Length: 178
Image 1 (tube, rainbow, N blue to C red):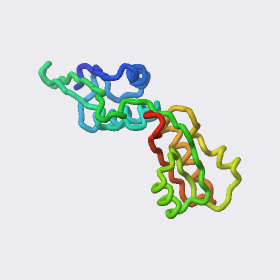
Image 2 (cartoon, helix red, strand yellow):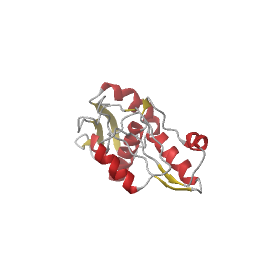
Image 3 (cartoon, rainbow, N blue to C red):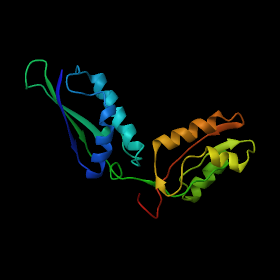
């Protein structure tokens, strides 16, 4: 049984983000301790951080320490948020979006060779009105990256019968590291 839950967060800007999401956490005092519960919490924290601008945040950033010395059937749990890579605890901003209705593999290869700084590459479809595509795109420029917005864009664009492929890519800009 979980006797206590505490957090050790390396980056102070993550504290309010994690704190706001604690009411959705399945890890609570008095609940049975299980590895599955920790995995669910890890996925929850990653999702919350990814939806708050932390594009490079992953499950590797979430560590658990379980102290079982407090008594029989008692676990004091510490959830740690640690930096694993240079960008893992940085908020990222989408600088530019590009929507390409004539996407094909050959154009992708030529773009990669030219190293053109494109943060979003999207669609292979028969011609659809630009206004329709723009209404389905929830990834705004000069706004923090949000996993929620990416998934919403993917879901809505994929629901259009004329769209055959939705490919959303992000690349780090050479001008700004975030």
